[in-house]
Length: 93
Image (cartoon, rainbow, N blue to C red; front, top):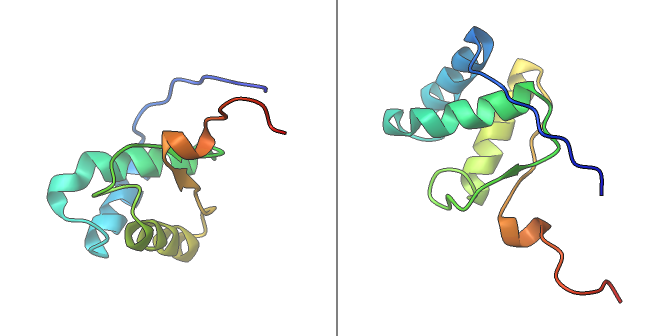
């Protein structure tokens, strides 16, 4: 498996995208950090965003909301999964 780690920062574009998620009421203003996290991953074209946050991130309705805004703004959809979904246990027989 090819792994790559890249350090990223909040850009003005990511901050604006995070605000769009909030304006669309995907989540409330108190979840701004979660929105920034998703916006950064979206703009960096991450293969997948992995989280245990079921309330604000790994939640089907919210994922649809984030991706709806991404689509409207011309960005790629983002895969959002739990660690359990991407971790391989044992052999793949």
